[in-house]
Every structure is written in structure tokens, then in C-alpha cells.
Length: 241
Image (cartoon, rainbow, N blue to C red; front, top):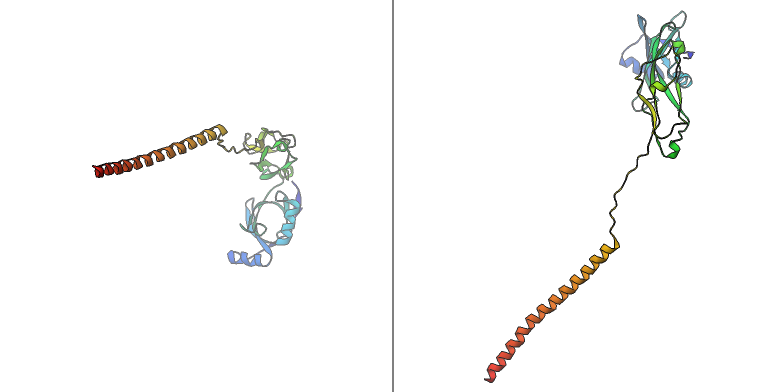
């Protein structure tokens, strides 16, 4: 783990109103605690703190000098950010450490390369993005690089596959999946096709049905006409008689 210096100032005001005033002044309220010592409230220049994080990240040993005396090592425990504007820093917690005692830290995992399986349509899944490690501060890595160039469709990298120094303890379950290349998801749409023969048969049936209907209509008209003719003939015969 890298070591870096960060300039901080002690503050004597507390509470939400004080924190808002500090933020309006372009600073970040913070605290440092741990190792059975008193909690100390701090204020940090926001612009300088952002530049520090861009340079070193959050996984770094920070030497701060709170009061007169030698700097003491701390690590970042938590940084609170605005839920909407993530670039706005609301608060920072630092915890004191000893360089001779193990510490626990969440170390980010960085993927390197493009999987061979992805070029064949495979989907890269990356569910576990940090590893929780326990070791001496000097041995704690800033990040863990995982090369996925040779991964084909169906390949999986688990926690147990990560190689680290023997003195570094991994606290995550060995069988947890870090990254995989899975089969592409295909959506199958069912298409109903009607064969031409069926359409032809339906057409013929339609024509035959129309012809039959037309014939039935003509017959009905003849039936209606014929009685009228007979009736007129009968009437004429009666007149002649």
C-alpha cells in the first residue's frame, strides 16, 4: 500500500450547521479515530482532497499531522458522497493504524484485456468488484489486476484463483465468482407460417361456397316465381269455364 501526505486542519465546531458552513467554504468535514485515542474533528480543502483521491485512490496509507508533533498513519474508512452529485464530498472518516499490525481493507479488482469469448458473442459478467484483504499495511495492494484475455465462453474466475502473497489473507469465500464469460442470450420469436396449399384450399372452398350460395339463391327465386305463374294460369282457366 502506498503512503502519501495529506494536509488537514483541526476544527472546533460540531453539528450539522457547522458541517454545512464548512462545505460552503469549499472544505470537507472529517474525523479521525481508533487505537483507543480521542476522536478528532478535521476539515480538508475539497479541491486538494479530490486531487489526492485521483492520484492515490482510497486504498492508501495517509500520513496526517493533526496537532504539533510527528504525523500519524491513517487509512480512509469511509467517504460520504452526495447521492445525486457523486463528485460532491460530504464527509470523510479516517481510522488510525499501526504499521506493525494487520489491517482489513476492500481492494478494487481491475480487469485487463478483452476475452476471446467476447469476440465470439460471449457476455462478460463482473459481479465481484472488490476483495476484502487482511494483512500488514505495507503489504496491502492498491488494486488487484485480473487478466481476462484468454477467457472463452463458459470460463469463470473465482476468488480462489487469485494469486496473492502468502502473508495476505483473503476474507471472501473462495467459491465466489469474480468474472465469467457466458453464452449470449438469444430471444427466439415463434413465427406461424401458412402454407400456400392451405391458402389455395381455402380459396377453392371459398369459391365453391360462393357458387353453391349463388345456386341456392337462384333456386329460391325460381321457387318463388313458379307458384305465381301457376296461380295466374289457374285463374285464366277458371275465367274460361
